[in-house]
Image (cartoon, rainbow, N blue to C red; front, side, top):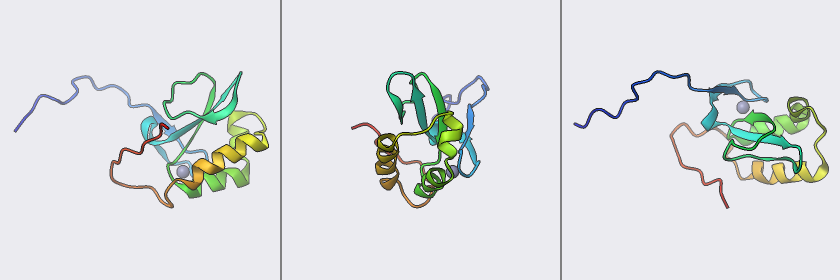
Length: 110
Ligand SMILES: [Zn+2]
């Protein structure tokens, strides 16, 4: 039995909510979309890009709902271009139909 790896500090885990289904979760388990001043709207797998961000579940239905309802436009306070939407759709297509309950390392780089 190995102990002592538990974090001592009880800090707030940043909670974010999916703009489509309103589910709240830790920042890490949601996908961030960010509107950057220079490069427009893009995926932000690292969560580090500066700009206005919106979060979505790692599940395709939430993304499709967001596309339909223009929740992204509202959340990012912009109108996504056709190209930006197309890039997000490609990404959404790679997502599972439902949330995976188990922790899995989805490779977002590359
Ligand atoms: Zn969601």
